[in-house]
Image (cartoon, rainbow, N blue to C red):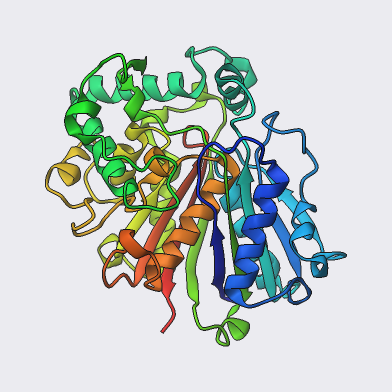
Length: 388
């Protein structure tokens, strides 16, 4: 049974002192319920994407959305965690419930409160998403891992520092127009391409501008079976969705190969019966700019080792043939872990229904969404299409 997104809520991402994880969940849920024009009584279950891992004291958070609407009480509520793809894990679990016939309407919330802990604790918590047998190798947690991936790419295909700076500059320019973005400032290519006190090297060749933001935030979706979705004024069909998981230990694979994302993109496009050229835009997981560069190749936009082509020729720019991260991506919009996958789907739904405001891609009819957990460990690709 096909499913559709019929409503959404999206809070601004940023640093919000005094706001709890519960506040983020409740506000996003209320916004989505109101946008879809449904109440808690209409909803058959709630799915929450949330990593936590020590960011917030609320470990058992699945029922916190009930405070958005008492009609949700007594309905099933489940928390999903799959590292940085926790939001997509929640979406896919809700879709499974609908496709099985156990639910008709689902509430999905993705939320994370990251800024109440120190920078060192953020690095440690995210580092715990790696394989414990490889802790500290390479050093520096996930910046270290992706710094090593960038080093490997540079050794294999040549220095791509300028390419990464162009990706960063593109996403900051896009994010400057996004009212939900954490950083709404166009930094420009020269700043992103220059190592300085304000843009230091973080790991390997990656500069600060090559790394996504630590953010608080939440987003929510109302998902419905297609027989129900026809009654909603705004509906976006999930035409296909594919999850691919790889080994967790880096010793079992070469992260540079990005094999999981390659497989997920290929299967999702095949399942949707379309090609990359049919997409109007894509939202991809740019936790680091090297990840977006590798995504161009995983999507099939460019041959392996030649991803620089599509940023240099304008293909992935907002006015290009296939805009990538018109929202600003994780780079500028921010990366509240559990919220990221839900945010990507929500903003894509806005785009496909002409509701995206200043970041609108004109005439958008079909989208690709790529959300990743770890260093290409959990790869989720969705193909979304505007319902006619």
